[in-house]
Image (cartoon, rainbow, N blue to C red; front, top):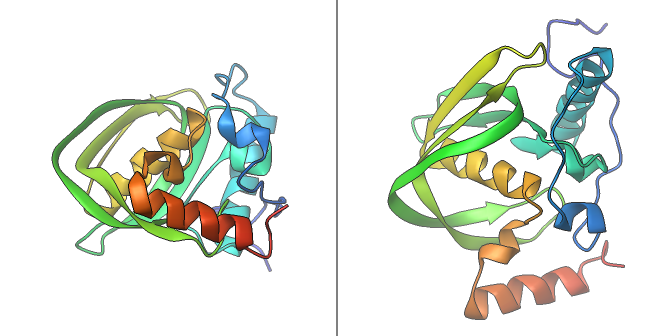
Length: 179
């Protein structure tokens, strides 16, 4: 039996958009209606993220070019961070840069060392329009920056250079899910 207090428990798993889909490569539009449809989208994003065993998911990854993402992600101290942000803005990304393994639900099975800042702060709103501020370090900072990239029309391979980029894109072309 599903319990509505558990994120995603009332959501539907939506099909994932994959690398090459135009919705992943264009900036998303701001959310303008804080209503039941937004609440359902957030629930669907959680359900889809959990079904795919992810730690974050942006709305455009399920085909809706709206500025909203969900997360259920640990930091480097294994503290769980759970939430969503509507109309987020990356207001800080600083500190040391760390190259660490990064993957994406829209590029299943592809992973590459990607440079990210070790600290990030995102500000936006919750599903009711109330302001939220989310601060992360380590792996959680990586997650926040990754989801913000999605909303700006970028995937993690856009951040790669040289041999890393070549290998990741070659693997994506050869993947069983490639068009």
